[in-house]
Image 1 (cartoon, rainbow, N blue to C red):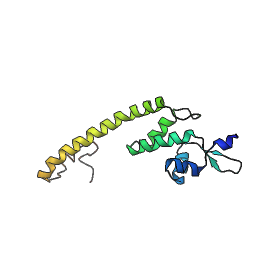
Image 2: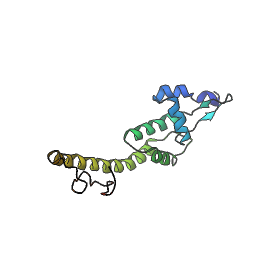
Image 3: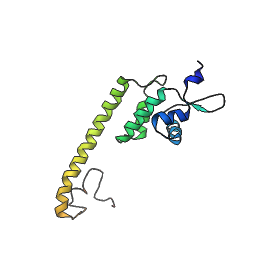
Image 4: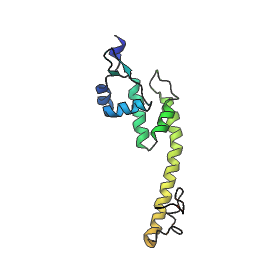
Length: 140
């Protein structure tokens, strides 16, 4: 079996992952996946791209920025699919970020109850307006 026969076409990747061809090209430009070119200069992908795309989609779904995904994927060997151990390391690191985000959302949710009665949305007094990232001098 030739090397080219073992590589997947963009259509095969799209069929297997549900991402669009434009998403494949975007991921490639961002360094998240790598394509090879055949003799006809058409893109072909190794099977390990399927697992990388699965990781990208899951990480995006939970709100991990593409830059962070790219940085972490660049630490993995490119000649094989990410392993279960690789996924365990990635997901463990991302869990702490998610825990922090969840805590912020719970705080926001809990403070919304107080705002229902008040309704002031005062720049100086409203606890929702004083959340981290909202400074008193910034316009809103």
